Image (cartoon, rainbow, N blue to C red; front, top):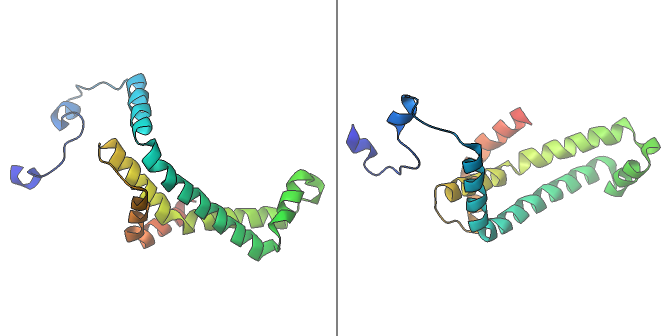
Length: 146
């Protein structure tokens, strides 16, 4: 049985100690470690975050344009609430749902990058595309939860 895990990567404490209840969870240590990992990987993760943000805004803009014609009308409705109609609210909901579902593979790639960073591995901005190997599963899951 040990041979199966011969090349496994071990991160953190031991499974035996966790199962016997001999562990501690200190929120300050967890936050400190998270800040340290984020700071050390900030510049490699920033372009991937910008790609994800840009993709979501692009999909939202296209969805709004297809539904209401001019996204600036939606902006005007936010500044003048008396012009806000249920059509705008529905259009915003559909645009947000579309952006969440269609950019889900990029979100999965960003999540995989974050996991890599937490495990101590380096990543490159192009690794955001690794989520595309799970496109259908991720989009279905995001559609079910969004």
